[in-house]
Length: 274
Image 1 (cartoon, rainbow, N blue to C red):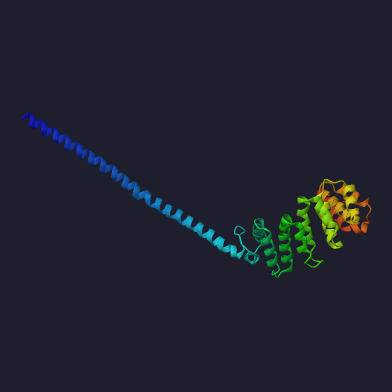
Image 2: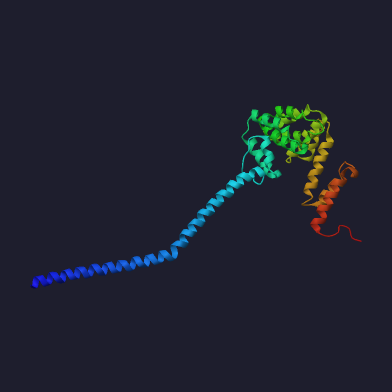
């Protein structure tokens, strides 16, 4: 009897413990359910929003890629000159062209140059061809000059300048020698580019090379341009240097005007007082 009572009590205790545990579990689960009800919808909404944002961003990226055809971005690449017309801005168009040229070999450069002839706008065509020939000059500057001479003599100065601006850094002496054999109009442009590249030269060295070409005036122009550029730091010295050189003041009117403008901007006051 006593043993039966003990078994009954043990069972009752076990049952009580079970119900107590169940009750605690129910409370815990109920609490979790309430928290989930209150907060999880917002969590899932946020997750949905994040997903929507990601999708939207992907859509924008896609739209951006699509808008590349409208010319609003420079990140997309094109494979031919015709593709450049998709870009509205000059900057985006230039970036796309330079990206093409960076990986172009000689045959590809020639193909792009041929395609550029179909560009209707003459200024844009010339600018595009200048960039192409600049790249060609790195590959073969002599062939690049051969291509440049196919353009009318009074239009090809930017092409010659682009070629020699690269050539002077890859083979300075070869650039000088090639310039000697050019027609006068091309030679002046080439010589000017060569002389401008040597900012480490003295005035006399600049003049001496120009004299070898019979083009001393080119050297004087280059030196004058350098003086105008230096006027940003010391306009008075640049002004006096130009007044004391060997050229007439009438020939230097624009340079003197530029220096005067720098001078006024620097001092922010009238130059001449009563």
